[in-house]
Length: 192
Figure: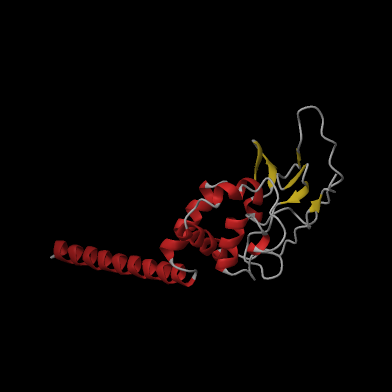
C-alpha cells in the first residue's frame, strides 16, 4: 500500500513539474514574441554578439583581469559624461587614436563617437525604422540619408549581410532596454 502511495506521489510531482515547465516555456515564448519574434531576436543577438558590435558600442571598464565590456551599458555608445580632450596629433605611421572606453576614435576623418544602439527614442535607435537601419548599413549614411557614418564603423563589410540578417539585428536591438545615454556628435576634420 505504501509503495502505491509513494508511486502516486511521485506521479503527481512529475505531472506538476511538467506543467510548471510548460508554463515557463509558454511565458518565455510570449515574452520573446512580444519582443519581435523569438527566433528572429535570437538570431539578431547571435549576429550582434559575433559581429563585434560590443567591441565599440559597449564601453570598456577596468575589471579584475584588465579591460572588459561594461555590460551594464551594453550597446549604449560613448558615455555622455566622458568628455574627451583634443586627440593627440598623428605621429609616424600611427594615424589614429582611441579613448580608454573604446568608444571615441580620432583620425584623419576627425573624432567619432560610437552610437547608442539601444531603442531609446531620443538618444538611440528608438525613432529609427527597420528600413532606415538597413539603409544606414547599406549606404554608410546616418538613417540611410544623413551624414556619413565615420570610422571605425565597418559598414562596408556589414552591407554584405542579407536583409534577413539586418532585420534580425534590428529586432534584437529593439528588444534591449532603452538607455538614455546621449552620445556627442562627431567632430568632422576640416578639409585641407
